[in-house]
Amino acid sequence: MILTVLLIIDVFTGVLKAIRIKEEVTSKKGILWPLSKLSILAIPFIVALMAKGSGWDGDILVSAFFGVASVYTGYSSIANIYMIYTGEKVTEVDATSAIIKYMLGVVEKKLKSIYPDR
Image (cartoon, rainbow, N blue to C red):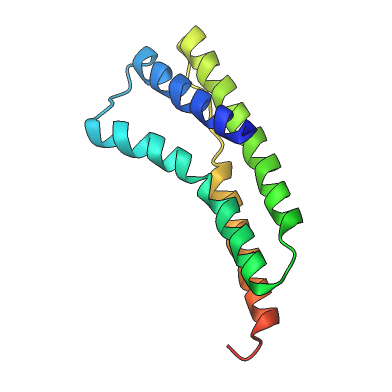
């Protein structure tokens, strides 16, 4: 729930930031950007279902994902608000890609431990 609220705030502040710094917002970007942000919510559910279906404990991984994603999303929202307020661009951190890549690595490692011959 917390991550959902943070993602909604991030999308809202991101749109306002784009308007403030006169960033071009196309209809394609206007649709894909919020959807890509919200698709982040699918990752922990996918991992939890994979863990449940295969009998391994994915609780720590899912909790870690929610924690890191919440901090990153909060940072992004605060950076957006700063840009709305000042009009100055802030260097953005792409933690989402790093989180997704890390999750892929953990799942791949788990797959290799379950199916070592594949």
